Length: 80
Image (cartoon, rainbow, N blue to C red):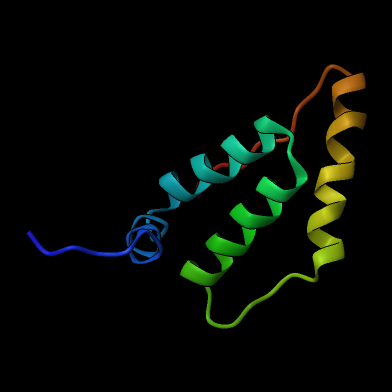
């Protein structure tokens, strides 16, 4: 069996929109801003052709979670 790096493995797995959505949702549920930013950055790298989101855009997702928590709501990503 050929050895591959974790990054290469994740790049392959993140091609699946259902897996990618689950990966981002796990980070959102965890609530750790660094995890959300890492998950979105990895998904963008694996699935896009140079599309990026400014860090402040990703960090805005982090600031939204406590507001939604207070309202008894959550943010979720789904595959299309």
